Length: 117
Image (cartoon, rainbow, N blue to C red; front, side, top):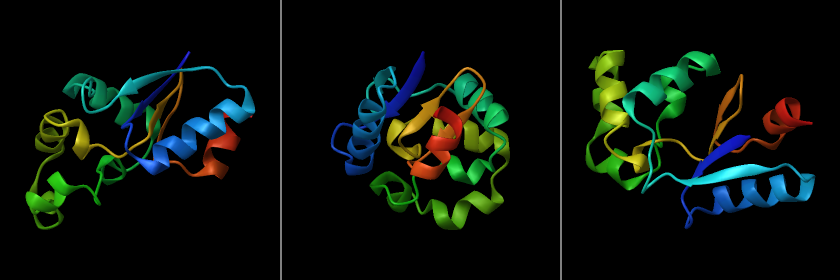
C-alpha cells in the first residue's frame, strides 16, 4: 500500500491525491504535520529514493525560511539534516510518496506516472 505524506492545506498535495483517485490507485494518507516521518524513516526514504537529500526539504515553507536554512544547509552534515528534518513535518517536501521500493518528493505528474502506471 502506498503512503502519501501530505498537508491538508497544501494545494499541490490536493492535486496529487486527486490524481491518484482519478487513476484508481489506492493509498494511505498521512498528515505530515501531525505524523511526520522520524529520523530513521527519513534516512530510509532518502536511501531508497536515490535523490539528493536537498530534494527532501520544503524550501518554500515558512519554517525553512524562518530558520534561514538556505544559507545553513551547505554547512550541515547529512546526520544533522536528517535530525532537523525529523523535528517538523513542515520542513519536509510534500507530498512525499512512499512505495515498496521507491520514494518520490513533490508532485511531478510524469514521475508519478512512470512509477505507478
